[in-house]
Length: 275
Image (spheres, rainbow, N blue to C red):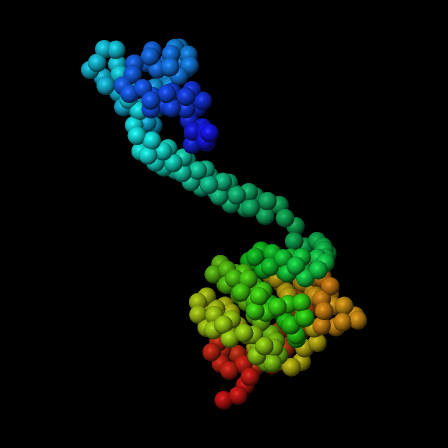
């Protein structure tokens, strides 16, 4: 039997309400006897049920009579009350989460070197999307090819979701790729970057043919490198995540030089370069 306690009632309240449904108007003592709720608790139980809108009281009768409201009405009221309580709890947790992020972020040391790896396409993609999600200022993406494991049609929308979310929270996105790489992107994804938030100045794409490999640079201090299989150059075996501000600064300097010489791409342009 489904337990009304799941909707916030106590065991005694559950038993009292169920008993009342088959009794009609009933006094407190009659209900205590029928439901098995102790006489010393029955008035508190009835007061609580009345406050919740599950019973109605006939105050002019002696002794006072109580009547259960219809189950459909009672359950609607319980669900509404419980939903309101849960929404308040969710709000409390979200506020608590924001406070903890702020407190813990203040204790984070970003200047120390750190290196981690993710093995396999799924874990590598998850790690990369996590780092994009954590970006505060800028994400630089440099790539010369799509690896054989990266299904653009399947995985592209999820990547765009994370990039779009980053743009919306104020992160600049710079993408440097060969022109023919953009031509491999399905039309639906290209159409998507013609609309908000990708039409913002914070999202920039440029073309260059002077690339040999790729990396992701996050907030000027963190780098992600795809690790390729030396026997299958277009196959990725994992992702290397490096936090090293001095190394990141050196690569960023090289990136800026290539960026200034690269050809600008505007959403809506033909990526093939034909007119």
